Length: 66
Image (tube, rainbow, N blue to C red):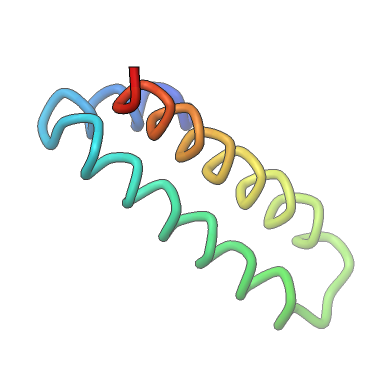
């Protein structure tokens, strides 16, 4: 299951505002993992996930302001 599919289900169940907060928290989690990782390989995944969830949070927050 891809991130967008997961996010769509979360938005459907919890709404845009709560989902935006979730995305921000998920991005922070991946940032913590990225900064704590001592291995090279997972860094790409953590970096991608952090950026994807952060961007999704910003997009959802924009929706609530319109």
